[in-house]
Image (cartoon, rainbow, N blue to C red; front, side, top):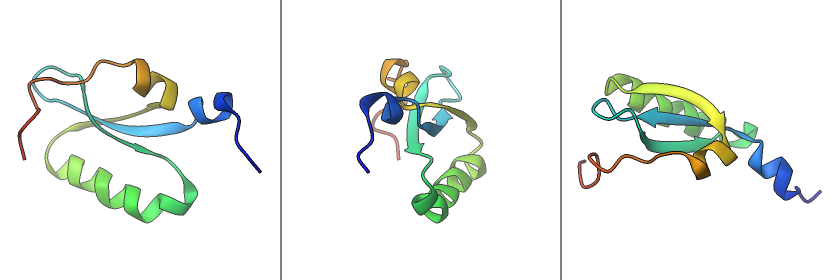
Length: 73
């Protein structure tokens, strides 16, 4: 079954927020078939001391992304 644009936009995502500016630095879409991968990624964020939240794909697209974190590894 094909998803509509509205269904995709309302899917939940995990996001990591920059400790400096509070803007988005990373995102993964919360899909059942990606649960292990998402858990691994989110646990990396938590170990790094980042704030993790859940928002929708639409909010990720319109959200503010960190500029101060670019280029860091």
